[in-house]
Length: 446
Image (cartoon, rainbow, N blue to C red; front, top):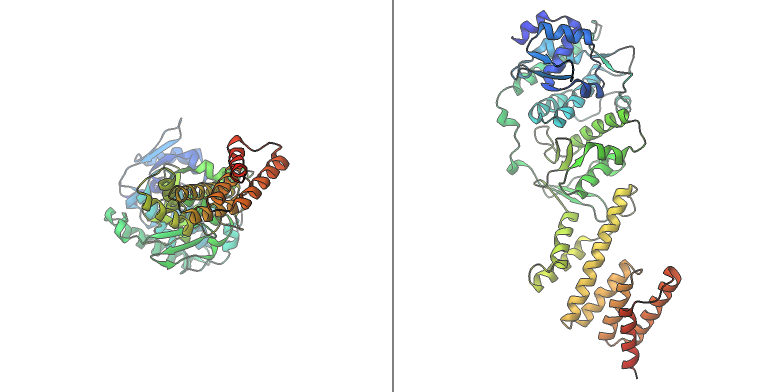
């Protein structure tokens, strides 16, 4: 059935519902309810009777539409979506903002259920609803808005008002854009060669380069958006479930409000990062697994881990391992997000990478000691002691390199410091290995 004919036959009160189901294509009614869309059972029954192309299973709540319908939406159906109003509420929000909210939530939901191409269409349409790059009037009210189960969207058609002319312009713009998006699905597939590389630095502070030039926007400098982006980078392309991210970012918030907060945050993050044809190629939301795309995102933490494995697992020649050690020191400017990290997951990453650096420094000292580069071995042992003076193996290696460098007195003093630390902090004696090095120092002096 042609959509123009369909729109003419359907009553106004179910036309918005038809447009919603046709845009989404297939899914669960309960999941649409989580986005704040209230679906009246009476309207749903009438819709399925009038339009057999939209099928709904009453028991499971699953729905599906004919594949051709979503790409054939005309202005009358788009009008129904843009005219959705909240029942019994009066929000100080313009029509443009309301459209932006509806379409952005639906676009992220489409990514969730694997309809990436349709989501890209809606995201491109959504971007046209905002004037240039500035936030629309009243956007603060929009960003703070939450959808809950007792405040859901109605599909009643809005009565004409004195603001009808701007709405008609918006409808025409939306209709023209959707028509332009209809053909050539290949146009929505991002080619790897066209995506500029995003280089992210987390050691010290967050720094981003796009195509070799500094790139960082103010929303990424603080708050939950910065935290979410850094957590995704730290996960290095491995998927995080949406539920895990929500639990990390909003552990005590009501689940419904946390879900809407996630959708808004994810969409804003996609808009803040560099885009190609209004699409963000750097973030992926596949089957509810959130991740960065490692093809387009490089990070210092990922390079650090790769080089640390090369050193610690004895991969490559000795010269290659020494080169890797030098590069590791260049990368580690400071702890991950030093001084600005408050999230426990990021603090755990700080401890992890600091421990990894310490292992590399100890390995570097031992390699130089075996090669009789005593001065270099001592330098790396001292560097390890600066990173963590609370490990006995660090004291032990420092004693060995001091002895090899002819600093016998310094080595004895290091042993005394080690014994004092172990006694005061842990209440234990030095291990047999540490005591053996001290015995050798005493015997050599006799």
